[in-house]
Length: 123
Image 1 (cartoon, rainbow, N blue to C red):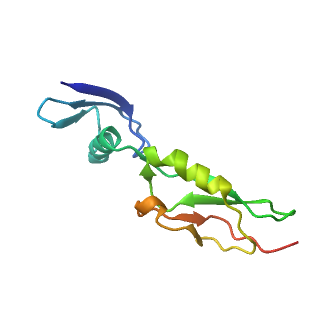
Image 2: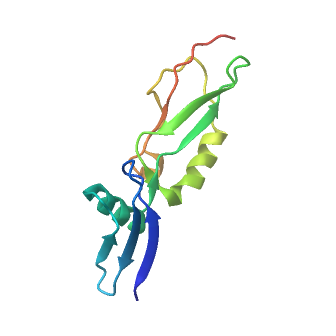
C-alpha cells in the first residue's frame, strides 16, 4: 500500500513544499526539496517525527516561580505528552545554572532536559 504525506521543510529558510511517498517495497521518496537537508527532513518526519521540547519547571520561589527548560536534542513526538506531564510535576530549588541537567535520559531515549536560564536564589 502506498502512503503519501505533504510537508513543509523546516531545515532551512527556503521552506520547500515536500511530498513524501512510501511505496509497497518500503522505499521512501522525497520530492520538492531544493537541498539535501530537505530529503533528510522529509524521511525523518515521515518515519519518526522528533521535536525539541520547551517547558517550565516550578521552583517554589516567590520572586522566580518557574525556570525555563528544554530538551538537549529532539525527542520522538510520541514521548512528548509523558515528558511534559513529568516536567510539570517537578519542583526544583534555586539557584540553578544554565545547561544544568534536571531530567537525565528520559525513558531511556538518550534525551536530557536542561535549564536554559541561570537563576540565583532571591527569597
